Length: 290
Image (cartoon, rainbow, N blue to C red; front, side, top):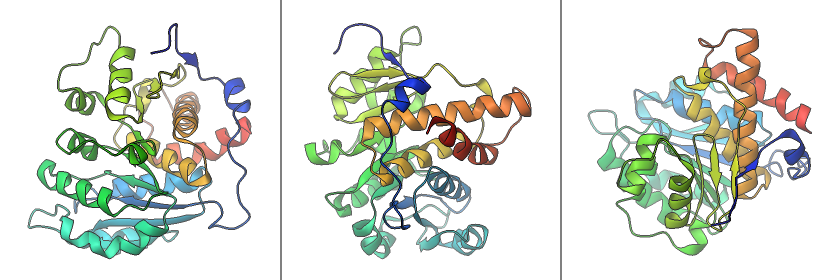
């Protein structure tokens, strides 16, 4: 682990670490596939997908529970939508993932997990998706999909290097198989990054498995609202699809998300703004930084 304090993510740091130039066509700007969305929580996939477009990705595909697929397609005309088979409770089943074989081969970035709701089935879904993912696809693993990693065989080095994990406290504890140290979160985030050999974004800390660490000090408590994490995961996926490496995408996405929250807090109030409202702020913050 590198000594000293984490590097502070500031506008200056980001401007000195510019994102890859956006391509001239939607395919050159990157293809994003978001997989998740049980029948009762398909909106999480929509939020993530729209966030990916808001940070500049060019092409969006969504995969959600079949009972919700038509509604999501109508509500998200910017995306192609695939329905996935479900059980009686509306949870996504792994056997329907064969419908995504072509999309998984063509995607530049995959966001896996928003809106999944069954720990046992999610474990099977994650295992199946990881086995189907192409050798050049970058991945954001989010929500229930994160907890599934603790019960799966270790990731290959080549796959782990293309992954960003976005755990909340509970999911981080599943990965560590112990409680977090609330007094000092950095060593725990570094341990997760080292153990899973992937970039990790947890709370305000980003850690790389090589020991590099960053901290995002901007942001607002109003971001602790339903759907906010889905927006962050989608923004990460969009930046990965544009060609950012995992650490760069994590630092940029965390800052964009936090700065968007600050703008909303100033305009709407410290609490009470909605995750969907974060989406509209992302391009403005991105433009200011660029």
